[in-house]
Image (cartoon, rainbow, N blue to C red):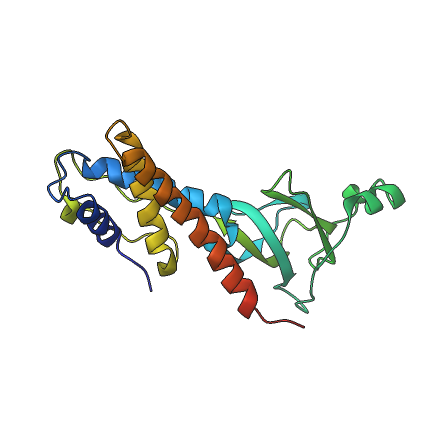
Length: 219
């Protein structure tokens, strides 16, 4: 189930008692919503987890799809015997077989290597052939921005659904309120309101992680 961005913006303007969007323009709130989606993914890459089949390019060096922010796992080959792909350490291969990058390309991958400092890239062993090699990967995707309505619009002009799962609706509302009250922090009490909403935003992400790991299947 997805949540309409309009419903989140509506809750925000009602909380701020600015239903006609005089103090906080709707386009500005939508920008905060888009920023909030990206901030959630920054803290919780698993919030945009995506499973996809990727055709490999020739050679050892591969990349996640263009909408991906970082690799999470490589599961298996999707061609041939569909053999599982296991992670290994690149330094070991580099030490034992320095020229492995130049091996003849294959269509069945045995291992992959990943460095979190280069999150969009991974290496496969043996190197992939120019055609026929494909793997199933899990990666974190970027959220899609909600289109900003025209100046002077009210919340009902907001269209589209958020990219994140529906359980993040309240989290995004807290983030928007944090940004909105920060803008008006010179007014009495707004600085404290802003910090309270950001604390709620962070606490919800932490709580959701604890809940997710608590019920996750275990060996």
